[in-house]
Image (spheres, rainbow, N blue to C red):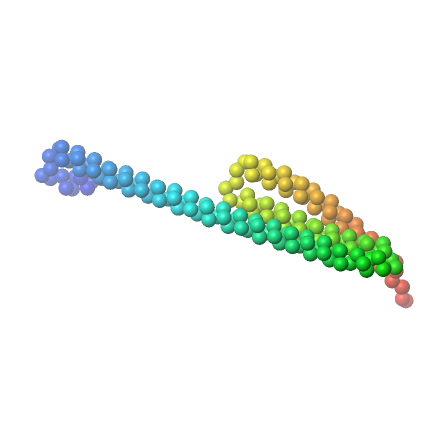
Length: 168
């Protein structure tokens, strides 16, 4: 600023020079304030868009989780009549539990992803605490559900190998 003032300072008295310097400072400050306000407005706008996108993503992922869960339950309900008619009910019940357990596990994983998406954009400590609690519970449930599904798969494979005739 002083360079501009000094270039045009010939023929200007000291009072005019002070007024000129003050006006350049005022213009520079006003420009800075205007731009910083615009940047803050843009940041608020961009953060709002990201929050809305994360919210919509969370809702979409939760819908997918509920659809998987509903599909698994409906598929299990559909097989109940054939379970009652089946001669080997244990094997049929084992297969039914296995398929339902897999649907529950996949649904839990989608719900965990939805919770992570919800807190991905500028989370508060409260939201992070809730995410930690929910993800801990869901991971705990999913771990034991996967363990049970693995045991059911082993039982299912054992019953299949015991029932199949050995040909030599």
